[in-house]
Image (cartoon, rainbow, N blue to C red; front, side, top):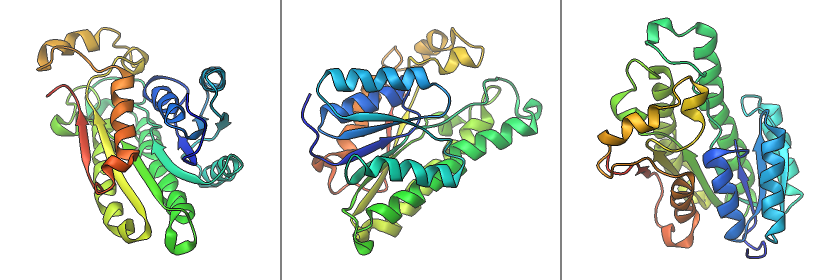
Length: 252
């Protein structure tokens, strides 16, 4: 693993799944990594240990991204590792249920929107304040994790979740234009079906297998494949890319 030299990457929701894969990839690329988590302290600690064993620099930090004050504290903590230059908005929830939109409790809708939309906005706001070259920051890159659920809207399963990810895509495009002259690029990665615990947590442990025949490539993504797309968007090779929504979905 390369020694940290690209600044600090904040990865929200990084205790497992896609977020953990992004954190590990970021460390390999030379970033010091703040591994954010909401509740899974053990998972976050495991990711930090793996990074450190390989010679990287990382720390775990608990913060609910739907709390603006907690987001500010998270950035303060990350600054202790060095200048923040990359922010990956991965934290997201489905509400851990499936069904028609009419049957989703109001409290679930509110919580999903608080985390997936408001939380992402709060992180983006703080990132712009810290990264903007116009405010003395180093510049950098924001990558938001969306979903190809926005294409069909996830009818009968997660329409509320799909709607929240539609908001992520719109925010990505708008913010990218707003801060392009401030040394900040903003992009989104939209995974399709991915081998994580997301489906099992919502009561559909076999959903990935059931979806495989509908995917042109015949299989779900692995978290590391999504992480690779994120790292490309963070890299200098994507230096002229902003406002993009990059599907990682096997052609679906």
